[in-house]
Length: 66
Image (spheres, rainbow, N blue to C red):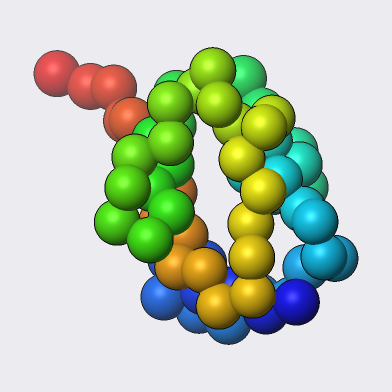
């Protein structure tokens, strides 16, 4: 299936979860926020939230500094 990830087309296996996408992008353990179709997906729901054809996914990560 194809999704939009941060504005760019990305091909994924069907039934991919947000958690699996995060692992595939090597973002596990980082301070990130995930939005699917303009809805925030809580970290506790990453493993259970399945992506679908055409979903728009935005992933942002916090950058520390001072």
